[in-house]
Length: 334
Image 1 (cartoon, helix red, strand yellow):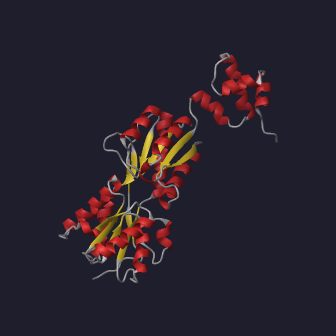
Image 2 (cartoon, rainbow, N blue to C red):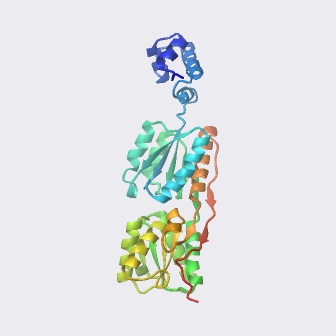
């Protein structure tokens, strides 16, 4: 079967190829009757892509943008899987942008998405800075946040209760007899990281355990930073028997530093992570961690965004549930 061309459209509509091109690019120089004839020919022939004609009619491109600080991470890929699943079901394409650490390329990619005329944006993990919000506002399209939220701007979000999840992760270590507990947090100044530190700190206070700033090291949620943070803690922090890492990747990096010191997990040191990535299941020993339903979070975000695009209706934010997955990296001291 031959794929229809722009010439086929022109012939079917009884107009020139130039006129078809002008219609498809929404330029001037033709009557409304001609425009309707061209769009009808596009639809009837199935000219690639059908979305062109639909977009000219409903002013949409059937495309959404997704901004990730690190598209290569297991965390991002799980969320993206959920986003794409719903987008595909509803006839939308997805443009994925890697904004890099600390949002170095966020403004650049917001401009790219503006030029691509995306219908909406899923913004993940980063702090929604004022400049990002203003750029999105100027684009005039809906936005949904994932794994982050804004206390300044009323934008729907999908996330776990990070403070409560960190509280429960640290409480799990305490319940297993540990009182000297260190933490590897995410990026200093990051709201998600700060909220997890708050949960860690609060549970220590609730169990009459002194919070020591020297037992907290900071990474960037990636495994390399977890290894470096663990090396720092082992060298400089007061002795500790357990560690809460604010991401699985950092927990796995920390495990590497522990093994390099000739220590054993969980015999010499217990570790709990955060995310429940596939990596957590296949590392040795398998990592005890906090499960957050990343693919579900992606699906919910995509569903909310498309609802805003298609109906312009308000959607609510969602706090998804989390739970601890017990594996083999936490030893009971009882």
